[in-house]
Image 1 (cartoon, one colour):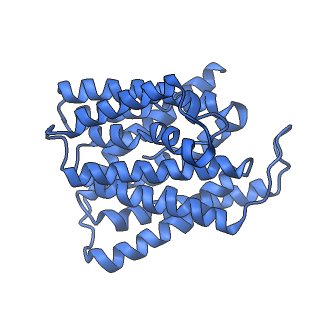
Image 2: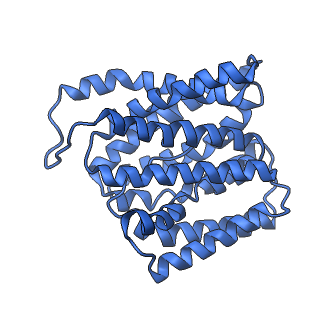
Length: 297
């Protein structure tokens, strides 16, 4: 990779890691589901002009994309926006930001598990070892750790499962316009969150200057800008090469939680985090093959 692209990749993963702190700060001052929906409706709206401009340009050399089908956008939107971020925001509310970053980013491990029954890709010895390590890490972070309630941990693992299911769907879709898909999934998946939140949460945000700044961070750098940068990198490099960097997201998430929110990095976070990251790295070689992964943060 070109050094500039390496720097961009590290920046993208850092922003997605810090976003867990942003979510924690924002939902402390408002209804989580409503704010999750607002984030993606606004973020998707910012991408609309870019998608329209891109539609008038020829595809990148050597890259063919097929038109998106409406039901494909709907399915990815429900899994990778509505379910992932609905469960994710509710889960972050009930755990530390660092634990949330670790648990939600077990996605590659779940992809490896789902790929066996759904794609006929059996687990190899390396991937199986990765699954075992990641499960041990999840147990270390989750069981009697004081890092979150059982309900919060369950919500985050449910979000990771929804994200993994979306990854399987994306793998089956083949080559499509990822920027158009991302914009569509944000708008289509964010609207149900926004409507459901308004109807069910019966709360108005009580913003502070800090929470407004964090919300702007979630909408602009962590959503609109990061997705554009990520998809441009995917156009230059293989999905396998790019997804191997995603292990940095929980690392940045844990560090940001410690620095900004003063969350302790005890032995459970340290040991569990190392086990999760090791498991993700081992399983990613199988889970990322010909697959597009979009971050959850």
